[in-house]
Length: 429
Ligand code: KE4
Image 1 (cartoon, rainbow, N blue to C red):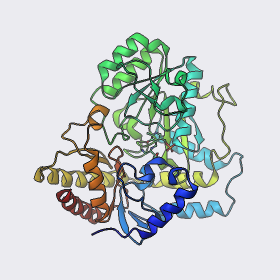
Image 2: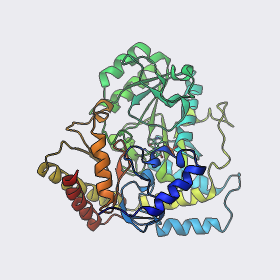
Image 3: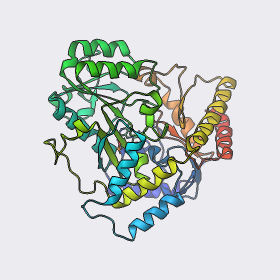
C-alpha cells in the first residue's frame, strides 16, 4: 500500500526554500532512492514515526548512533540531569575525563584522547596530528571507505591503481589530493607493493577496519595485519577509523575483534549517545604533540560538551553490562539466517554481508569484498526495495552503499516482522 506522504512533501518544499539542497547532510535527500525524503516527527526504541503518522522499524538508527534504540530512558535521564546544570561552559568538566577513561578501558591502544564534535573533525585532526608527528605529508586511504568530509579525504583513486589521487569534490585543491593515494580495499598485495615503493613518504594509513560506507565489506584474512606490519616497518602511523565500528562490533571495537593495535583511532556516533561527539586518541607519545602540550594545533568551542559527555557516559555504561553484545549478536544472526533463507528461495542476485549487528543486502551476485564489486550493484533495484520496505513499515538506509544497524531495542518480533516484509518486498521488485 502506498505511503501517505503529504505532510513530508509539504515540509520538503519548505526545507528546499531555506536549506542547501533541503537537507543538512546529502544522503538524507534520498537522491539514491528517489521520492520525497520522509520527515521524522519522533522515535522510541526500535521505531521511527514520520510526520504523516507512518511508523517504521528503524535500521538507520541515526547512521549507527542509537545502539540502545531511540529515547533510551537511562540516556534521557542522564541528559535531563545534565541539562538542569546548563548546556555549555567552554571549560573543563569532570565528565570529559570520566568518558575518556571509559573509552581507554575499552580500547587499550588509546593512552590519551581528545573529544571533538563530529567524526569528520576527529579524522581531520588525527590526520594533522599524524603529519605533525611524522613530519610526512602523504596519506593512504582505501576506495569505498568514507572518513568524513575533510579535504584530504575527499579524494578519488588516481587513474593508475597506486597513483596519488585527484579531488572527488570541487573546492578541494589538487595539491591537497596529490598527498592522498586511494588503494583498493582488501588488495593486500597492491598495498604492500605501494608501501615498498613509497612507504617512506607516508604519514598514516587510514582504514575502516570493517568497511561500512560501500555497504558492509569485511576485511579479507590478513589484510589488517598486513597494514599493521607495513606501517610499523615503514614508520607510518596506522589509523583505525572506528567511527562506525567503535563500540558497535564489540566493547573493544574492531581492533579488539581482530586483535590489531592501531597507532591512532577515531571514534564518533555511539560515544555521544545521540549528541554530537567525535574523538581521536592513541599512544601518549603521539598525543603529546597535540596543543597545548605540543605544537599540532586543534581546538573546538563545543568539544567535550557537558550534555554530550553525559549522554556518552550513560550509553557506554549500558554497553559494558554483561551479555549486551551477546544479545545483539543473536539479533544479527537471526536476521542473517532469515535473509539467507529468502535469498535461497528467491531468484534475485543478492549477497548478504554481516558483522554482528551490522549488515548489508547487496543487489549483486557477489562476493562483495571491495568497491569494484560494490559499485557494480543494481542500485535501481535497491531503490525499489527501499520503498517496498518503507511501505511495509521498515526504514532502511536510502542508499545501497550504506549499512543497516540493529539496536538492543529491536525485539525478536521486530526481526521476524522485518524478514516477512523483506520476503514480500523482494517478490514485488
Ligand atoms: P561525521 O562527521 O558524519 O560525524 O562522521 C564522519 C565519518 C567518519 N568515519 C566513518 C567511518 C563514517 O562512517 C563517518 C560518517 N558516516 C556517515 C554514514 N555512512 C554519516 C551519515 C551522513 O553523512 O549523513
